[in-house]
Structures are given as structure tokens and as C-alpha cells.
Amino acid sequence: MNIIVCAKQVIDVSEMKVDPNTKKPILQGVPQKISDIDKNAMEEAIKIKEKHGGKITVVTVGPSDAKERIKELLAMGADEGILVSHPEKYDYHVISSLLAEAIKKIGEYDIVLCGEASIDMFSGQVGPRVAALLNIPQITYAQSVTAEKDKVTAERNMGDKAVTTESTYPVLITVTKESNEPRLPSLMQILGAANKPINDWTADSLTSGLNPMVDTVELKGISMERKNVIYQNDLDESVSKLVDSLTKEGVLR
Image 1 (cartoon, one colour):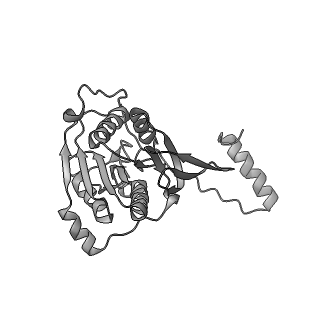
Image 2: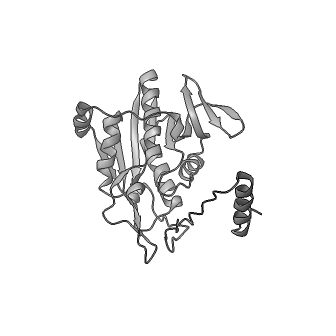
Image 3: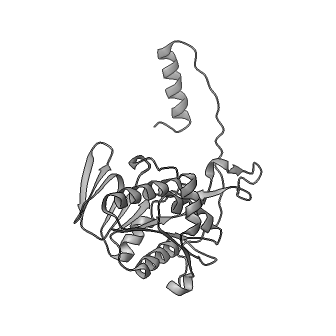
């Protein structure tokens, strides 16, 4: 199996703070990491490789310091990393196009694995966009993946029902956080990751003339202040007051 994992370097949103005056997020000095759900994709890739053998290649579009994040996935069990530099201005269209072109350049592959969404923006767009650009089948929001010699089967939780989906290869699959528990690499694996190759590819070497289709005008935090209203009277009376309050706030109609 030739497996490609698309991963993204993101800020650690749990460490992010919002300026109380401007309402803008304070990003300077916030630690960077691989998006959590991309590690679930990596774990799924390792499980498939352990069953069938093969090679795992990690592809990341990002700045030069993303190499340190790629090493985390190499330590987990990936064989090779590819870092594609992105242009100054980019959006989902640009990132998806660069990932798709990088995958085409890699050549032969059976499965492309992605997290269902990144923890910073959580749009869920990149996986389906890449599949469309590669013109291959896609299975999204997979909670379990079973790869066989000639097909792959995935279980998808659709809320009130579960759906089993099958596909031949090649195929792109996005996995959910519930799909598995990513393994922690040993010290020897972390040290060994330094000897695994990470290739640098420029955006221009893959494609030219890419322009973002969406401009981000402003990014602001949302106030999460609570009113801390406590109802301590009779249960039925408290429920009635709560419903009235929520109706006045526009939560209920």
C-alpha cells in the first residue's frame, strides 16, 4: 500500500487568548502543533501499513518551521515527509490545489488520508476538494476503516444511523477523532525520525498562477460571557422561568 497523509500545522487553540480591547486573537508566541485529527489520520495509515506493508508519505503545506511538526509524524511511523511552501496569500482553494499537485507528483498511491477538519478553522473543505481535484472517490467522516487487498470499507456515523461505504483504490478518506487513539512514539522512534527524509517543494514548482478566491478581511473572537442566572425555587417554576428567559434572549422561539 502506498499511503499519503495530508497534515496541517496549526496553532494550539487551547493556548490562544483574545485581546479584550480589540477582540482579536493573540497569535504571537502561541505554540504550533500538528492538527489533532490529522494524527488520527496518521494512526489509521500506520494500522493499514502494519496489515499490508507499504510506505507512508506525509504532505504538508506550510512555512519552513512546519518541518518540526512533520518530524512528529515521522516519529509515529511515516517513512517520508514533503513540505510544500505556500504563497503569501492563500485560502482553501490554494492549499487544496497545492496538496493535489503534490500528490500527483508523488505518483502512485492507493489511499489518501486526511483528518475530517483542522482544529483551527474546522471547515472540513480540504479533503473533499483534494479528492475532486484528483478525480478519485472520497469517503468522509469515517469512524472506522478496514482496508483489504482490492477495496476499503468505512463506517460513517450519520447521527440516527450508521452507513457502511465501500470503495476501490485509489480513494481519499477523511477520518474523525473517534476513529482511533493516536500512538505516542518511543524515544528511539523520535531519535530515528531525524534520519528520515523531508523534501522541500516550492509552490511554483508544482503549479503557477494560483490566486486565492476568498479574502479573510478580519478575524475576531466571540465574547463568551455568561449571565450566571441560578434558579433555586420549585422545579416546575424554575423550568418555566428558564423557558421564559431563553425565549426573551431569542434562544427559543
